[in-house]
Length: 177
Image 1 (cartoon, helix red, strand yellow):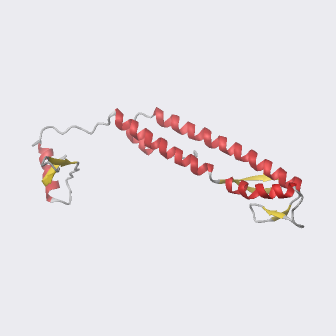
Image 2 (cartoon, helix red, strand yellow):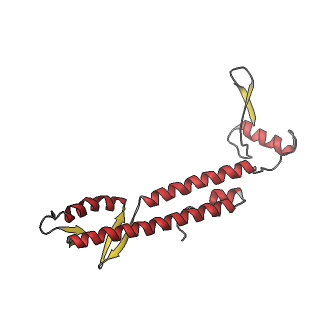
């Protein structure tokens, strides 16, 4: 930490700020500070040491990143196959399909009703077919949701086992490749 000229708290105490000096520092005082540190002017420079608190904070940050990944995945969309067609599957698809199934069950579908599949093909649908589509969509949502849950748990366990600070920071969140 460095105390820069006239940098004081409200009660007049010198305020020290973190500063990283380098041999090619753009500021004269940075290059001078670096040279003085290397020469031992301020005593022995000890290597950077990661504290247990820093490692815990890095793990917590990575857990937050994993949770964000999980939320994004749960709100995303997948495609599944039913009766030779590929169908979009996600919360948005469920929201669109539910009222249609309700209307179909009440016998009020318009003549020639169709549902558009993931390949943008209009598929004529009966009440039974719409009901089957809704059930298959729910099943696929549950299966995908469980995969997401398992993966986020696995990632958190892997992060918790890491003992190297940089390894925690560099841990890649997502599906394995």
